[in-house]
Length: 172
Image 1 (cartoon, rainbow, N blue to C red):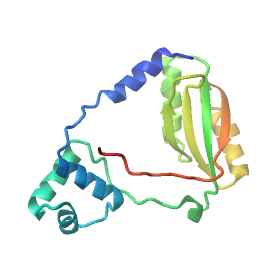
Image 2: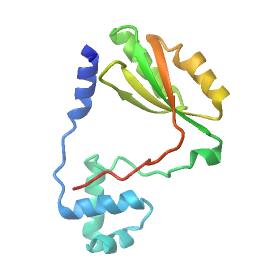
Image 3: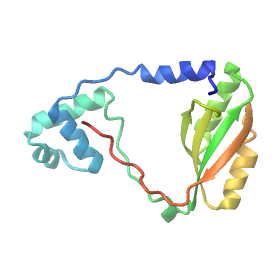
Image 4: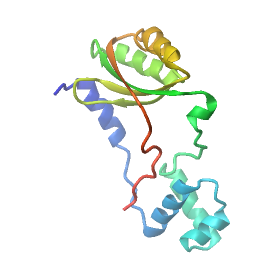
């Protein structure tokens, strides 16, 4: 198993976020909002069995604590012309901090890379990408991802069909 010095410190940085102890009502609020983030406070309060003011205060506290990171619409990628989903495994040449910073900055700036994960194992990163077509993906892979400073090589796996996406997080 490949073990990179920066992978561990990079990943540990994200694990340091303090875990919040959630009461039953907060878990109910989170479950409900994961299903319908546009629900009004009145509907939410009724759904979780709280009155409006305490429900609103709990939602605000969850937002301020960073448990609720934001709200947004899930968009069907095919309806906006993004027909291809590919998972790109990236191996970096070196563990140089400057090249890693350039890589991370380039990944963050590339709009067709919709997720990026630091990985253990034989590859350093897993990128979830979307593209309009195979030709568009080819251009993204060969002319952008492979040209990011520090990228040694990539391997690509294409999604044939999404079986489960955007599932609510478990709150047991």
